[in-house]
Length: 419
Image 1: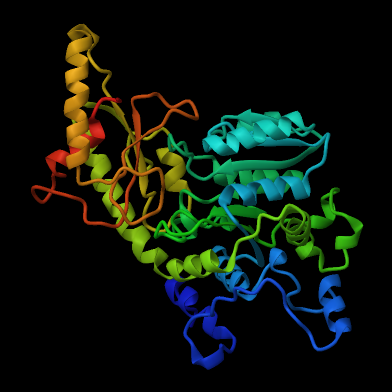
Image 2 (image 1 turned 180 degrees about the horizontal axis):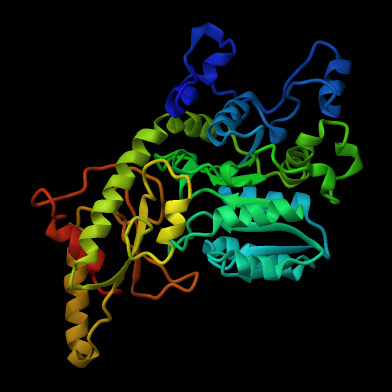
């Protein structure tokens, strides 16, 4: 009998012996690793034998986390990094060269968009398209296109990429398909089902889930044929072809760049991941309740949430093989402040809203995936209007004054005019 998602994660550490019969892999803080014979160390350095040589290239604690992530995403191998942005940057540094072309969704996390702008200045051209329609991606492909990059659900406006059809397109053209799965997590969606070759996760968010550790990961699904990828260096072709890509990412992107995930955050992320399913179920349920409530609120002009029937990509959400829920974050667009009141009246309104903020049940924080309920964040990047608030909903009980209505202070905080 095949184990379920949570059971698989919980038993991951126990599949190999652990000293002192611990139920978790211990935290190895050592930077260097010694061997009885220098020749053994040399073999590890050359990749001819398994083991650890220097902490920048990984340690047993990080390896235990990588095994868990691979199981979550049904992948063949994972490389972990200090942050999610480091994982994206390392993938691009390792796999792309000047003159290469990338097709990317135009609906991206602001820092990802900024990073891609940097690569454009370094001779790697990136074309941005509306990835909610596969036809836009198809038109942007070129003979030198090495990669297509999308986010499952865009941050912050929740546009949903045409994931299945883009996967088919990339497979038929032999193009590497890279999917950032941060906003859905591997519990709600596994990009491998839609033929993704590489999967990016910011472990800081839902997988870690407790807001106490930064981390990122790149997982190889085993679906992409790396023998067709012209940018693999010859010295990494001694391994099995299926591992060429992740090996080059680990060597050129992790070892050479040095964006290493340390042992302590790796341990926090690994233990936090064990409750991912429980947290995503609750967070998604809270988000749906909040989205439905705000959709009817007189001070909210629009709610962007994939679980609502009026979401622009609601059909794509139905086609995508999600596990029960749509997402745990939403955006609400507030009405514009009335200009006719004059400056003095507006200042009074802003002071009143600040008082509501301090009394709110939600916690103001610039983060996704934690346990806290509905932070209030005004999104000014990625084309979002100043009146758009992103609400990454946590696992705490959705504050109510009745069985169906979030509490007044909670609502006033979310719907307050921008300061």
